[in-house]
Length: 370
Ligand code: PLP
Image (cartoon, rainbow, N blue to C red; front, side, top):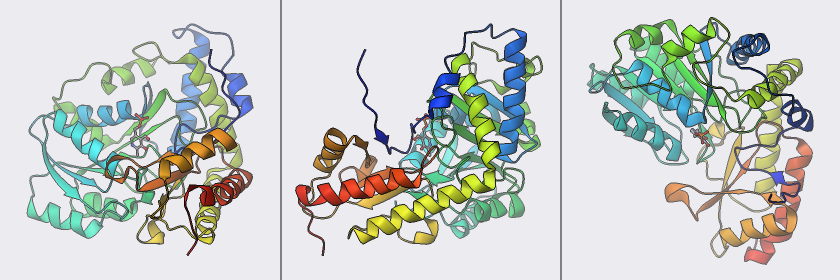
């Protein structure tokens, strides 16, 4: 067994797990077809609906976030369907690749990494191609630290064009407001290891009435992620396949904690801590990647690696000498940025520690403040 020291885990997922949740996950194993599991899944599903602000159907899947995104696609679309996929980063690109893999006829709408997706560009694309059936959007682009204007996007996609809207909310849900019903999002998918303060391994997905109508004719192949099967089993308090029971214990307590704190307070805490992060980074003389701070994410901050600074050395020093785990860049931003996660179980002290560590190590990796 590897010895894991206590770390300030500041990756944008997995995120730190509070000790009472760790303890909850060590409860005795139960039969996932028995009465205790029925009680757990029924209560957790109802509580999750409060967090998602929806009365739509909601399913808990044993999978990482990608599983729920795949479920979003295969349950609502057919090969050959025209799909508009908006992307401004590595996760947006991945969502696009997934829907292409399943044979959709995809129109890619790409934006600069570090910039927001523009609702006007979505409007123009939908006007130009009336045959588009669905629009795919990532709410919070984890690879760039940008929160896209989902509400405005939804007003175009749903309000003006009545298209199906599939949302990757993996690094936003339970951290920043995403009222699923209020914004009329058809399918919203997220994962346990981000805002929910529990380990990776569960994913959550909502289906609107319109999404279910699409499911009636959708022919993309599906088996493990067949949400009709999930729906049938949920009626008797079960899942089609063996669920991750230990994570369900953790989820139950995490939901109690979130709802006790109050979602408005949770959102406010994320806003406050992310502002502290950005201000501290700029005070150190570093530059944010995000081009317009109005769109800066409240869950992850991407910072440009200054000229002359060795980014991997920075992260290695932080990890090896300060037990601070930072994230690197992804895709074409590899080597150009590093990222600080501030989502889920995160406090002001966690970020103050990050800033203090950076103040100590930056001069050691070639940084000279301008
Ligand atoms: N989408 C976004 C925005 C993410 O941040 C991530 C993971 O970081 C994913 C999708 C993929 O989720 P998972 O790694 O849980 O499959």
